[in-house]
Length: 160
Image: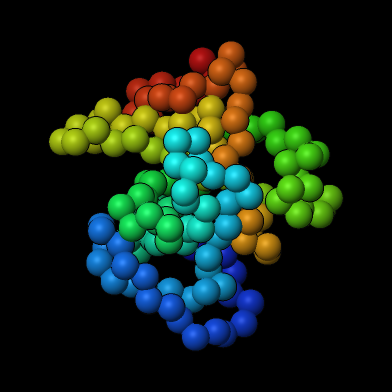
């Protein structure tokens, strides 16, 4: 799945990054995703890369290159909530340099309480839209009337 989100265009020399969670990692510079504006609450972090959680896991880590301690657990929205259709304006599509025929990858940021996997929630109010061709991304805030920032992953249908 990581290849779908960030396809490799050409081979460049890998760079080594230091993270608090994974230690030192070598990554392809072509895999770096630049946020067009930072995540809410994290103004110093605009460069990320996606690290798969495991070979058969649907989860990913969105790891910051700017802040070694910052990493978000994410899942593609299509896997978790197939009917989820966040509103992405024309201005945001321009900001992400998306052509009219091109789609976006939508990731949901998860919160997993310590020692309580069943308490996992997904942020449907602040999905991450990624242009996989340009390696640009943005957290796109949704109307709180329609979506929840703490949607219980294991106990609730988002359409309910």
